Amino acid sequence: MNKGIICLIAILLTSVMAYCAYFGWATAKSPNDALEWLQAEYELSDEAMGKVSLAKASYLPECREMCRRLAEARKHLGIQSSSSTATTSEITEAYAAVNAIEEECIRMSLEHVFEVAAMMPASQGQRFRDRMVAALLQDRTGQHQRHSDMIQGGKP
Amino acid sequence: MKPEDDQKLSQLLRQWEPGTEVPPRFRSSVWSQIAARQERRSFSILERLNAFFARPAYAGAAAALALLMSIGVAHQHAGHVVSERRAMAEGSYLNSISPLARVSADGATLAMNHGHE
Image (cartoon, rainbow over the protein chains, first blue to last red):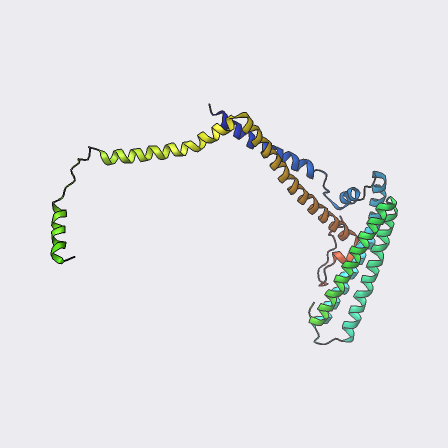
């Protein structure tokens, strides 16, 4: 009887099962979507999470409208810059329009972030605010760079 | 060496015959012995493993080591997966509240529904 070989097979099988069990347990609590992440990351109660969800639901139509306006303004800027070899007044105006809408978007997003942060426990709210404000402003810097490249390159 | 010596040596070699006689089926016997030894050698690895794991102390140590290693690898892998999921969820949240993040810079792409569900 190959007792040793049976023992080896049992060890290998047990190791694979241990791997699967630990991996499943360790990843079970990882977030599957944005709101789950928000609740877990900032340790929000169900009540606070309900308020955050409501605030987001009322914010979304406004956000959607801004997306539409921003996309249109950027499309217009792209058309203007691709149809010209030098910076014209139309390009300058289109660029200013994009900038104005982006400023408005940033203001609106920051207002929402501050509103949500106020629904969290103080320390978590502070952490959320700092992280989101940094991310939003970083995003804004990236957009500026892209617009400059677009105008200098003369292509959308 | 002279050419005459070379001829003498060649002649001698032609006349020489080995004194011993090869037993019948000598060649096939040699090959069958080689095959048998190779077979024994391939079995010996399994036999060695069998002997090693048949000892409770060795088997216990190997089991403990294998368990530790599998949990360690699972821990590393899970940590990587969890941090990746968190980063994706955070990006998704940011996308859902920031029009700047959602509308691509070329102005032609309308990401109207992305993240608004």
